[in-house]
Amino acid sequence: MMQMNERSEAIARAQRALKALGEHPRSSKTELGHAREHVNACYSHGSGEYVWNAVVQVEAMAERRYGVSSTEEQRQLVEATEDLEEPATAARGRAAEDRAVPSTGSTPDVELAPTASR
Image (cartoon, rainbow, N blue to C red; front, top):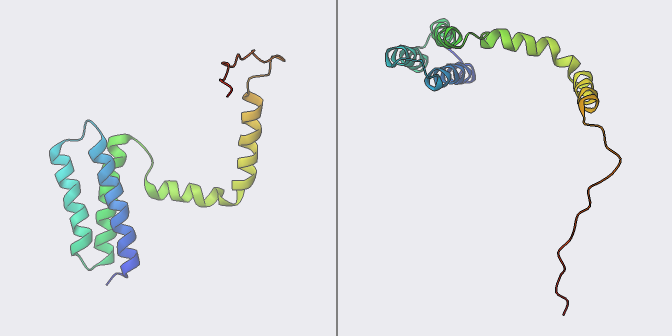
């Protein structure tokens, strides 16, 4: 039997993949129905192996439709770069500053509408 938190994670992943398929304009009703059967299997089967296999099937369908890497591959990339998060953020900030439009040295004149004084 699967632990409840493990089943919840599996169901969430399968539902995200199904949602992505549903949002793609070229997904057919047949394809969505097949993916929905895999998601439903996550709820009804007690075997962890069977549930995770169903998740992999739905994710693979979404991957084929979009041509993107699977969730597991993305997770591995995130884990590999987690320790580098702060330096990467700093580097992105410096890159953004480098791309910033340089100041022209003068600011445009702004006319304020006269206000009524009482």
